Image 1 (cartoon, one colour):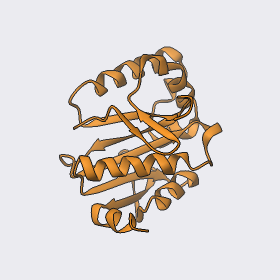
Image 2 (cartoon, helix red, strand yellow):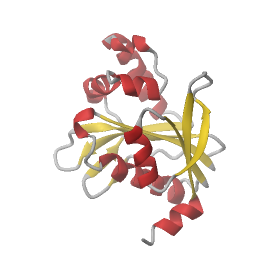
Image 3 (cartoon, one colour):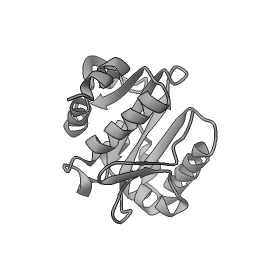
Length: 182
């Protein structure tokens, strides 16, 4: 998968993670809602466990793996706001997306702005045909972001092979292209 170095929007920079992002990443991972949504292990409360995850995360970015994540940063001062990324499901024709913001930056439209840029990259550069996301129904902010970026709710599905059900949202390339003209 072609991993972008940097994507820009009006207010944001979506960039590769750096070693210096470890403390911000740790702060993001401390949010219990993020732990549940990304199906992370509760033991990630320990800084060394997070450091281990972060190190493997940096190594994934430097490989030809089928996943990438970007730091979402303020364009003016490079402050870390959160993360977003894509994971290939079917040779990049279908991809799963994800996003999360530090709680102090939620509610300002940053997730919508970042995800619209990520969708643009997925459809125009990676030539994806469909993007999906699984969201727990208790995470109303996240499913509202999915709706605002044009994704359709398709029903409930198992969340990471567990008994928990998640909401499935999807957007296809033709739907994305039709929405860009509004």
